[in-house]
Image 1: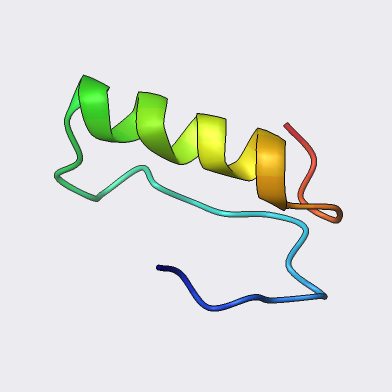
Image 2 (image 1 turned 90 degrees about the horizontal axis):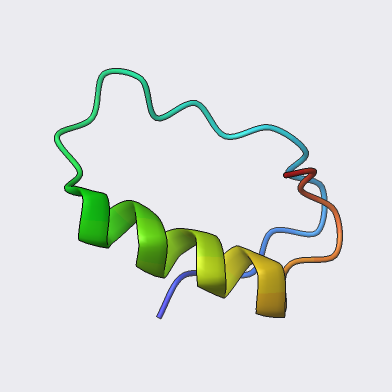
Length: 39
């Protein structure tokens, strides 16, 4: 489980080796759990 960050508004993933499936899971988690990060 990721830590909760109440101030995160931007997340750069450009140089990470994350698969398409990883991006999908991360996006779903952000949509459901995050209240500050803009998609």
